[in-house]
Amino acid sequence: MAGPWKDARGVIVTTTPTIEGRPIRQYLGIVTGEVIVGANIFRDLFANIRDIVGGRSGSYERILAEAREQAIEELQAECATRGGNAVVGVDLDYEVIGQNGSMLMVSASGTAVVV
View (tube, rainbow, N blue to C red):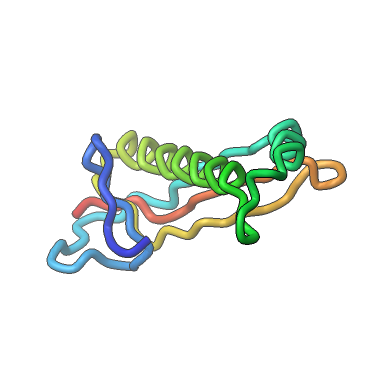
């Protein structure tokens, strides 16, 4: 993330530990959002190998982007539920899980705060 990002609920999300010009007034704890993408999607992606141009797969990148956005939205919703209006120190992780690496988990975590 290049800088703070805000959704329709107004919850700011940033990878930085602070938000310039917006002092943190209260820390509300760690919040997370996880999304698991199943095996069928990966089979479909590899079946559509023709999408690969110049070593990149548009279908695969779209699925990863959607999973990342959903994880961030869950993070924001949990923050808002706790009464926060920003999440700082956000970390995004991607992990292959399940038998034979059949699923991909995208997780987002950070600290919910009031600024």
